[in-house]
Image (cartoon, rainbow, N blue to C red; front, side):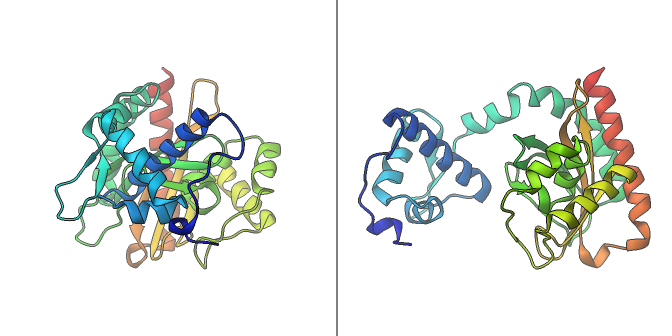
Length: 266
């Protein structure tokens, strides 16, 4: 693939120019959110596979409208603005869902001492982290707010899949699946077996399938219609992951997910 800096800044191949610009701007915001640090134009250009001139124009527009801002680093870098971060935390319906979850996430964090993640379902593609309770341990797992994970690689994603009708699960698993880590399964039959296990137990497990040396146990949260909308997970380094404790952790995270569901749908 030709580097983005060497490609001409050509117009959109299809669709209205305004729509293409909007999509590119949203991609810029998405990548900035996942990086969770100030980022330069050149790095953004490589990550998004767009010319630097296009990325620079998008950033200037986002900055003018108050959605991004330049950091005070010696080298010019960009970050999300407080306005956008505030909007993400206050937008409905996730505000209501997050508010319903907060006390239950805190209780689970106190009970386990491990990192607790709360993620929402983004379409039927990925999970996006919207809240986190940090572990009490010096060595702990960390995932930035706004980070996304494919459904097939995470405990939260597999827990959500386990709450969907099987025909939907089959359709999702029939897509090309990325092998993120050596432990990541991309075999639809093997993944369906994991989903069916999670459906029976009420929780799913991830053993270094999305990030190295990170394990998790997760359960899905249902919305008012009974469909999954989110998931809560206990995340820990593999040095503290004990297979014998999985049923115990699974029961805790399953009960927490049910409590959030009851609060959210009350």
